[in-house]
Length: 584
Image (cartoon, rainbow, N blue to C red; front, side, top):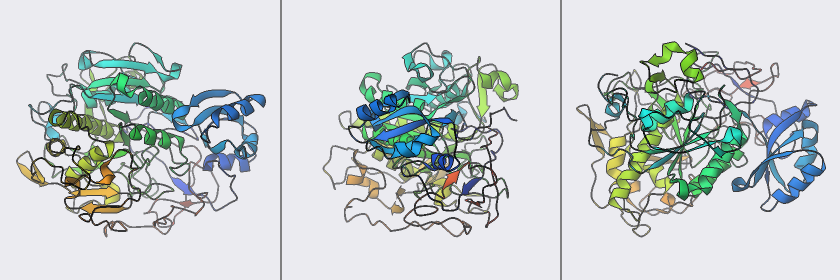
């Protein structure tokens, strides 16, 4: 089943899939590159593009006023200002980008990508997740859903506490969703199931929702709109009561995370104390061979501090032993930076949640409807929603026990990984870390651990208030936790999370170099396991994927450019791509 998506060269990709998407990523041969431009802009400058382009320009610490003056003096309109990441959005002739890159106020220039949104028992999702009827429900936890909007209705009763339309400048408005993706994601996070006798309840059915519309009725928008929404949430975090941001969207990675404006907005939000959950992407299969493909993570899933989520097929049972990682779920490592992603996986396939009945998705896809009030969708978008709901439960459980000692985002991420449940394939072989991260989300175990962590204890001391058993009972099975935390390109195994370490504090970037206590032994590399077949074209090490200057790392390059595929299992075969094509 498919719905139509326009052909685009630079796009955000809707992370709900109905069929496997067709995409091939390419590595261009090393060429001279224009300093400070991302790979797609560099390509357009080299090609002599005569058009204009919407770009996001990151500046020096005090560079916004000076750069604004310079742009306006040359007749280039400044469209948006992004103070959180010291950047602005402008429309500039492609021919002028090389000269602009030498302006002393300019740190980097990135394309402003067009965004595209890419039941066996009652209470079926919460049953699959091992959540009992008396479990925490996300009460008084705020989740910001940056998506296509949110259609009000009985599923959300009076818990939509804010709606802001960034396709119209960020103005407050009545909740609407004329595309439908945001409503479905919000339903997985916090729908109350009132129209299904609680069968299709979300993970945190009492959580508060703040909706930020960045996609129009066709599921399209701009990266700069997403950044503006993140900035707004971060600046108004306390006023809005936001604890979590859900980003069920993404775009191909055109540059390292350090210069990617969207990644930097995510990192700033995390530093402000907000947990950010992002989809990994739906690019886990090579369209040429049908084999598993690696290095398909999207931005902002490559943000080090984000909780990046892949998708699991749960086959509508509560058993975990029959779960499989969805073939389309994007695997790591991240393009350019070679970071291990996703961080974990979660149920995301064939999930039923609230429908926006006036939306494009609902009207154009009758086969996806479940009754009159729900839709069934699949993808890492849905999995991210499940994890955002789980984060709400973690925060509620910890607040109830320690109201004056909140969990930092790094602790939440570590709890999710540590308590996750390893997933195995049809041969009973455990999936590698680049496919499943630490494992599949385990809300019951995460709640149990979170309720025992007292962050007010001194650094390097034991911070559990009571012991925990590292297993969870689900559907009559005792399932062992992964007891693993992936930190950058290293793994921690054992009781690392039972101590208050510097890594878990708010101002440490996930994966950065820090001094660990003697109780943790960090390896220099991750051993991925023998079931990964690496092709000859992926360079995996401590630096970049692709050429050392990053210029050969490119998605969605022009057709007929000599190129090598990036997928690890293509074994050197070639391919080409013009527009990025998706069939969500």
